[in-house]
Image 1 (spheres, rainbow, N blue to C red):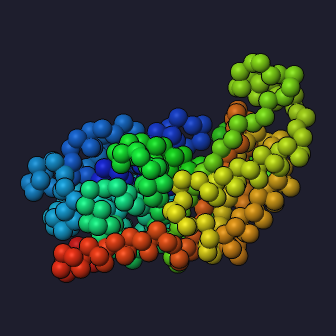
Image 2: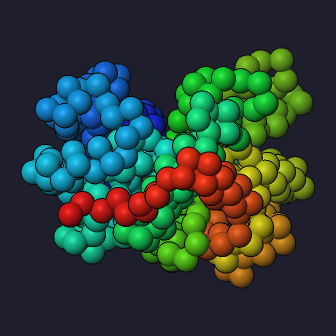
Image 3: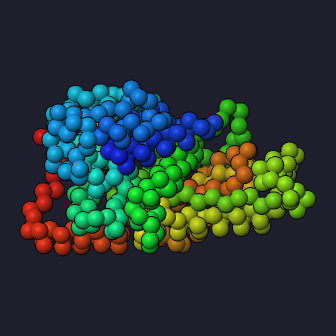
Length: 384
């Protein structure tokens, strides 16, 4: 699945930069172009994989390159004045070469939360490819958590109106109970980028690489993301078992030794167990919004590993587990052989999530914040 990536604000730029770096380091690169838009010069300068010419600093007159400090109304004003620059940013994505465009942002951010919907609205008028939001929910440990919740819910509503679906990730799922909020971002970026890359790469092959038995192609991903409710994505990986006669050496050497024979002896029961264990871990991984594994209307999964581990029975059993645990009526599945991999990975996409306790909690926190502050909170983030 060929994708264009647009990261908005600090969190969105970091996610896109990490996806672009992952793709560039892989033999399979589904990323057609990556772009970052921000009001903070330092955050843009910290990026490495997004090309310098695709990094767009806006609002210099208003904030001097120092960001909006969470002020979404100011960010909307900046977007209104920076239409030419925003058009230049989206023009850097050759949409005719893509199957979809992903717009990533931290939903509680001033720049990302406010300007991501503006960019999506700008793109929606000129492209036929589906647009998807990738939104990071704030942590309850943030200072002024009520204000963060209110900004996130405002942004989520705006982004849902102008995209086909919004894939959510929750910062609190990475933070844990004691860790500081800032320390959670790096692991969130890495895990979320790994999952996004693996999903986009599901239908891509490297040169003369082995052919999947069942490809999860771009049209199936698009049909899974059909625009009702919100969506979420997760990935889990487990090391491949080391044969007894090769134990004692390094894992990579053992795996490579296992596959020097064109017909390696892989036990079907072991392979199936590895697939089903990994899909269960994906279902309960940190990438999901809390409470998000139930009530999905559709799902898609892809299993990647050396070909002998991609047995049909294991993937069928994994599909059944997803159906049972999520209630999804349509579960699409595919495999992607990776001859040099030393692990088996499962990437899981759930869509049509209409009942999320985490969203309910944030909505409640928002109501309490607005009532206590007696604030009339305008939910419109569109550019006039």
